[in-house]
Image 1 (tube, rainbow over the protein chains, first blue to last red):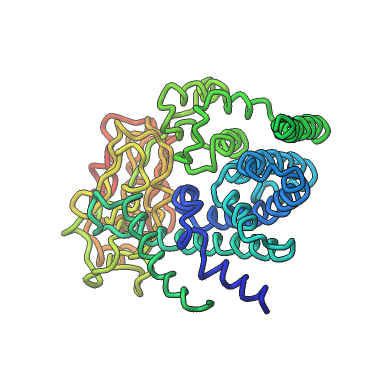
Image 2 (tube, each protein chain N blue to C red; image 1 turned 120 degrees about the vertical axis):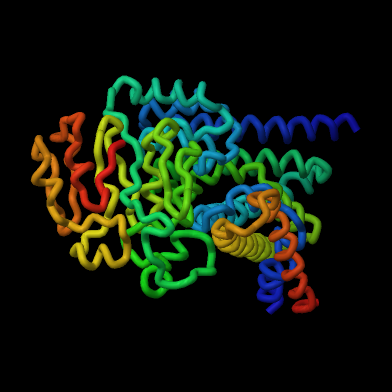
Length: 192
Length: 266
């Protein structure tokens, strides 16, 4: 039950984009088409879940025993970047279909702050392994939800001819993101 | 205290070495044969991964250039210089293809073609074409003039004037983006050297076509009869010029004899 609450919380209540404001760069950059947004979303789910597991293990079994907790930022970045590259190489060889659908987004996510953010949240909250995994997965699903919703809205906005010229493109995307963020605040009473 | 520093250095250095070896090993073990042109194009691109080309990063664009024959001028950051170098790698300059140009197969500007209804929705042909009755234009084959093609053009070469899309032949590169964007398929690509073309797409019988537009091809076959080269044929009730056969005669009897002036000189 607690895990279910955490899952809902990480998807809606503490949505990584709209509530924590992490991962905004690809959120704005790759959200102009729904198809691409979907690919990005799946890649993020994959990378966040996978890298959270690795960073959790490295923190608990390497940094904590040696009292090197203060090195977590460096260590996490190193682990995430190396891991994503490794997965990309292996995937390209072993699973070309999967690589074609999401592998091209992998390098873009390597240094995404959302990925590092989840690892740091897991560490700060001292989650155990299962809880950390649920949190990571939920956060990534929340990211996908956000970027696909945003892409859907932006596709429609593209068609709007009456929009004032200075607002077209990124400005209206930023306004939209702000309004969506306000809308997501409505979830904040859902879970204590 | 000193030991702590050593631990830190050892852990970070160790992680770095381990991952470095892992990646080096993986890149050898799992090497995939790729088209050398992809890496050549990738080297030419700026590497900013801005996504301005519509592909995910420079790698995505380089792959699209080689695998999907994507136009070489999509990189906005690199500009014409990069476009030229990509073209050189792809060898598209070498192939002297017949230069094409977009052509709007419609002359139904405001006042010539009728309207079904007053349309107040999104000012976009895609949106307007799904209105019941196939859009506000009475002719369901003609240009609606909402300018979806204008938005699709990267070269400022097509504009809507008086409710009809018109191509600026000097600026048009023949990329075909407008033709793909047009929901009616009114825009086509023709050789730049073509001298005449039929500016109507309505294949319905003359009486029906004439009712909705005074500039329609009525399918009278006059042009077929007067053509000196036998380059014009009828497709349904609309004439079609075969640019391969048309010798581009200076008198161009097809244009002068056409009762609705649906055949135009270019």
